[in-house]
Image: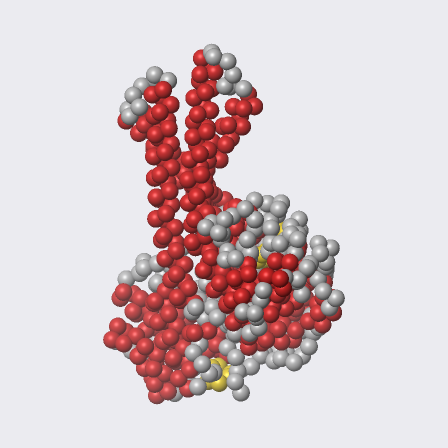
Length: 636
């Protein structure tokens, strides 16, 4: 499934989720109101259908359900890391030395570089011995990937890569935001059942139903209400499980298929699923409640769901979709004390060896449809990411994994060689002499490697940046803005880097910010689109004739819709107009974003080559439109 189709499907699922939520809420409220009416009628306290009594009950019940949904949604607004922590996850530090956790980090980093997204936070659920994993978050900028200790210890690198590729499919296809919304919705429609069960426990403990006194009669009414709420709560449970099953099952098949597409081998994810079937703890979550997160897990978190309510297809069916010859008698027998395979440690050490086999290219001939690669990394991208990661100089690689080094490396990445001394002087005035000296060291190291390393280094450093408080991140963004504006103007390379960094950091600071939807006029969107195509065409060509030809190639993708404003954008206004245009286009819908990227890529590839500046400009456009773009690969 293509990226934009997956995004549209996620939005349709969200709309159905709202419809079912309203239906479930209406049924539960009607049931509660009816029960209260029966209790009041049986106790001679009024008419059963007295609207003066039942109306407020219905309103209060509705407010309680909606309030619980809002409360849960707000509680999850911290993003994927908060969900992982609530499930007992422990954050894996960026500078981890444990071989298995290091292998996990390597795999996640390579998949992030291959996908064109920031490296997510990584968690291990240390108390869970089953084989399972999940991805959570509202956007790639606040995403987290969590695996159980069983996944870490029982899977080899190939199998682990298959599981992580499966989870990245959920990150790239917009499933994560839907999953978190579902957690809030499902909590709301199940809250009355939870209250009913609490009432029953309290009344049983306090013995309110004993005797024949008025206290006993009142206690009997309370018990009846509690029992009714507990029973009605099963309406919520029914709808909750039905929603999760309907939304999740097909997406799991798609994520399995995407994992194969990303890695071009079925053995990894298929063997991981086979190990789940043959392992005594299977994929069960035992030390946290799997009910809330069952729809976002790699495999079923509990054994109690029937086929109707299962959030995942049957394990054997998933395996046969990958390996048609599989029989259930083929499940391997995995003991609980099994730790990886005999090659695990050698795989970790061999795959983490620094090499110099890769250098970032300045330009490349591009084949294939770039837009089709959005959200769809290929095995070539994954291989590229592995080579690039292993080729990063040790000093820069270590800095990207260091709490203080990541911060300073981010500054070094934006320094422009002709103005390096003056920019580092600004840093010294803000951070001190010793930190400025480290920035200079990182900058000098960066001069020895290709431009293709810059954005991957930022993606690798991102988890450490995210750990800093919001005020420090805002200070960082302001300092970088000062560095790129110090000479009174911002060149396009600086702007692209700044735009990508700020977009990701804004998502980390405020994961729930809504920046999409049709909230912009057609005329504003049209002018913004034309401005971007004009700027892209001018940046990739030195002579007006070639620039006009590239512009016409790109603008033709819009048809008559964009037949305006063909005059060049003044050089002095390039960065300002580009920023304004991207802000406007960040609000358009999925179809508009797809058309925009088709036009931009047609403009860039008009001459058959993509320069480093054009590649970064394309990435800045994609980041602003929340379209994760894998690295552009050279074919020469």
